Length: 260
Image 1 (cartoon, helix red, strand yellow):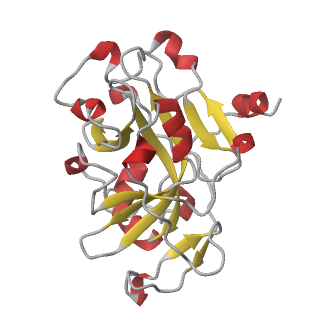
Image 2: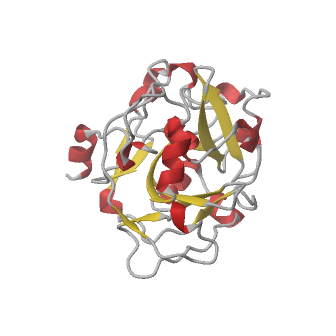
């Protein structure tokens, strides 16, 4: 949640995908969904997570997001899915990197003070968007940093390409959602989603993933792009799944520390 100073990360990563079979809600054959290697056998949508899931402390929620599946239903009924592989916790008033640092409330950050599960969408560089979810704690929220694309990759690629130069190279699967603004582009998360409820919304929601990471595979590392935040710069409040190719920035030092 670094505001204007956040750098958009574009570290290359790699995802493995296979074509899925159609379900009743699947898009037409010409836009057949692609799913992750984490699905085996028949594809099944996980159960939607309700308000009880979001009603937990910020750090716990950030870790709990890992392995869950973010779903976006487009106006034409196409459903896009991505597995959360990286998230950052912003702890509210005490956290100098948070938009609510010092208990500051503004028109921009109102969603951070709303009930757990409220979507907070903010703009950086005047054009890019980032998606956060409020948690327990006054002004606390979790930034979703990276997703592993699971379903609707071609639609994601089209949405990303619409924001790029006309002759830009074709994006690889691994580059679709490996950054906070990239995932907003790929899932068409717009400014209008701000202050909506992820537990009840009909266009975007969270599902139980096909599998959860083990504690041994969750890396705790410093957050990205918060050099202005004093002692909070080094606090390990970014969490990601070690070895997942869709993590935006790998921290080798943090990985070595977590393995000892």
